[in-house]
Amino acid sequence: MKKRALTGYRPTGKLHLGHWFGNLQNMLRMQDEYDAYYFVADYHALTSDWQNPQHIARFTDEMVLDWVAAGLDPERCTIYRQSDVPQVAELSLLFNMVLPMTWLERTPSYKEQRAQITDKDLSNVGFFLYPSLQAADIAIVRSDYVPVGEDQAPHLELTREIIRRLNGTYGEYLIEPKAIIPEDGARVPGLDGRKMSKSYGNSIYISDTPEEITKAVMGCVTDPARKLKTDPGDPDICPLHQIHKLIAPESEIARWESECRAAEVGCVAHKRAVAEELTAYLAPFQERRAALAATPDFARDVLAAGKEKVTPIADETVGRVRELMGL
Image 1 (cartoon, rainbow, N blue to C red):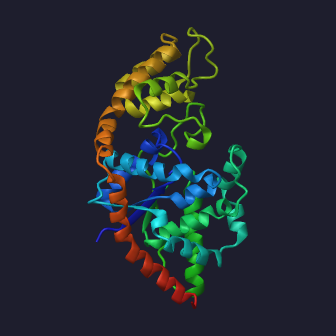
Image 2 (cartoon, rainbow, N blue to C red):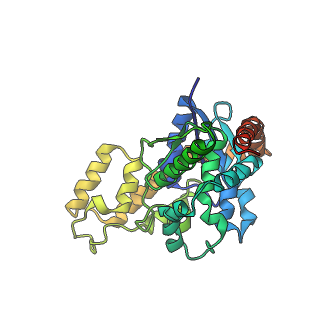
């Protein structure tokens, strides 16, 4: 039998190129190589958006449309909504009984997001306990593997430590998940040079119109040392060039690199070319998405089928952990 793999996204906004290249392409491969489970993490969305949750349901439906339009097949993988499986919340609570606070306090992404995200109140306990809930997401379906980028590696290791502690205290049952390293990497530069993230407002979204894509690309930072068109550039430190490399053939990229280093082409011309190519690259996906969106309740039907499949697995997992912990 195939090994099981799981990953999920928070429905806090539209999917962007960082999702597309950082994890979604890997998800497409996973549905053939593994018994793949993909969940919409609406509980997780509440940890940061608890003050303004009204958009979560809409973004949940849109995420399902994005996933299926990108190539995920509900017949070959399981797509479900986190809150449709309340057993996740109970398992997280059970994990919290054995989870030291110091393990949470050392999580790098917790400190990074508290420092970087200033327009949301992240002082809530739910945000602090995010890694515990993530561990429950993985353990609830007894997943063998989880795809991780460099920023998520500490979270997966924390999941492994929680499971190891619970197993060591009450008896071996839960699986310590292993990492799947995405073939295409996990860090796509944003328009400001930082990692592309909805939270940073520096994203190019895969469902954007051609006009929106062009506007975003034209605002992308390039080599900060290149002030004039006649100044030689360094493509290796140019976020625009790194994005271009994801969608263009090597021969074209080599030409742009050569002309940039020789100051034979300016950044504005490069931006226009990237905008045109990115629009063409995303067009087939956007056409499939529009067709799916025209079917009433498509996303909700997919989620309902996923819930039906996940529920008995979750019941078994929580039931066994309760027994081991004396409940």
